[in-house]
Length: 137
Image 1 (cartoon, rainbow, N blue to C red):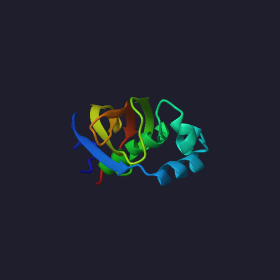
Image 2: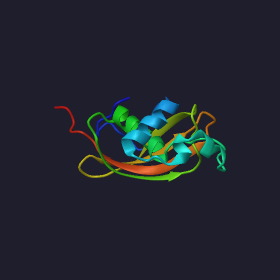
Image 3: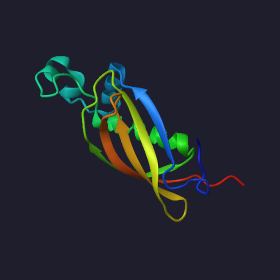
Image 4: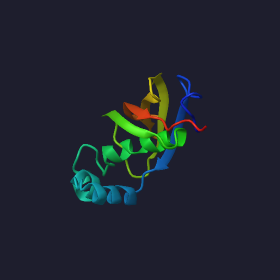
């Protein structure tokens, strides 16, 4: 559901889900310039404690604005704090969930942000601040 500032209540939430592919990771590496071998090199990743390639943490965090945009079309992202709790692997389906924690002045909203894998494990925990678009006349 898309919300306006006046409609939004503390506890309202929105989610977005995506399955992470090899292509997503390679494209993110190319766009971001983050060529860490743990993300792009199968042989190297096998030698790490993860045992296989993992997605960039920033790629996982990028699913948060997708949920924010679904809830608040035209909103402006002000800040994001994240903690990476668990690795994300190729083939994992990640669901980002944003939940309203606080409504501030001038259409500014504080959102709890979490990402879960298909097993329900929290892989990212954080908080975002966003400014909602003006209400329709």
